[in-house]
Length: 238
Image (cartoon, rainbow, N blue to C red; front, side, top):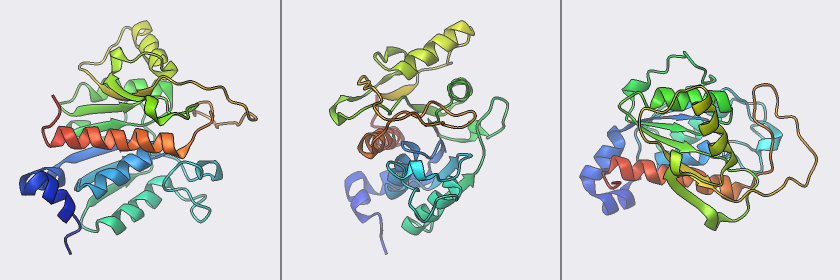
């Protein structure tokens, strides 16, 4: 069974081998991260670590890959790991039900690619600062909520992003604390910001404000991240 026959036809045996050998760690397996993880494994990434402390909630079902009525209450990373191994049983998938916090040791220097898809402003900032101090390539998802138009999703270096409230808040916090990333970060973002029209929801302790979100937006964010990672591993990005 050659599940990557179509991938190899496009990138060749050497490209497929590069994807299989790459070590990737993904923080956040929610609306953006879960779709990113699926695309990476379906594309031949052989070593993937998933980091997320949360369990599936019914409010996740509208946009997150692991979330169904049957998985509510189960750890997101475990649900996702099971699915990914059904796609490629030979993949090395590590599921860590942990929250990223400053000082936590995830062995980031041992990865080729680090992907940030978490919500907490402080944790996101600290992850990006730590990640950019390693040899790994760093990719980041900015805010995917309050959006409808998929054509407005963009890619830019983190400090060139404009129109994204989360990106602006991160840059402000970094400058206020007089600490900046050690190298460039490739970010996926969207300038569209729509108002919430429905009732407020309590996101829970340590979580970002619960804004309205659609699956097609979070999915495109996640697939875009995966595409950037694949291009980097194949040596196609400048």
